[in-house]
Length: 225
Image (tube, rainbow, N blue to C red; front, side, top):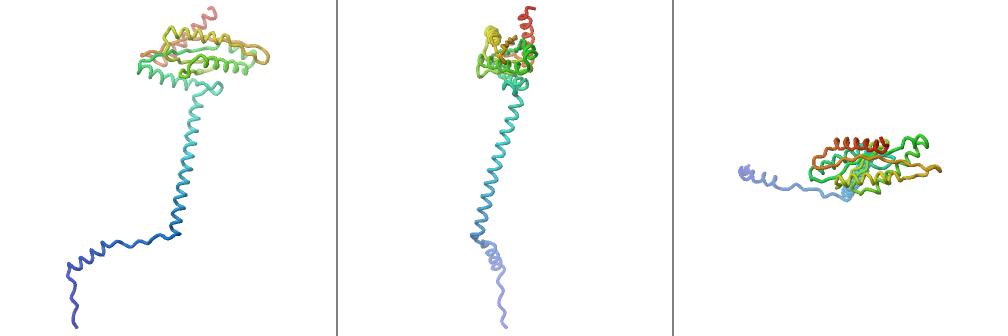
């Protein structure tokens, strides 16, 4: 029987390489498989939208909580924490850019007698009226904060020392003129204001202390002490 000659080693290697190089046949997805892929993609997009919506809601909630943490719930102005934070930012700006401003510390006169005689609702009404009066006297770029109880602070930009003293007098006069009718009875208060000028070498804590001390000096002057 005649033997069939074996292929040479070079021919076998070429055939093997040819088999490796030939691309594997891929099955074309059928309609059912394509529908499943579309459903999966649609579900993924819907999930992404829901997650983005929840993230936006969470971020808005965080922003609201941060704002409420820095805001006096009764008067809608900055509380002590919020005002001191903004004061430090402002002082940093003043020091860097050699700007100027004035810090006012204001103490409401006769608020305790109002609370004692008419109740805290009357005192709250007076505080709201005082904040409204202050807001009418300052610019939107200025800051108003309640440091606590009957004590407030204001930061007004670009005032000279002379201007700041004149502004303090005008603010005192505006509050002295306030008259509220509470349950058929008229109530009045007043305010004593101390000022610290903010310049290129200002320090937030030192300015607050300076304005606070000046406020007590002014309060003694108004009492005639």
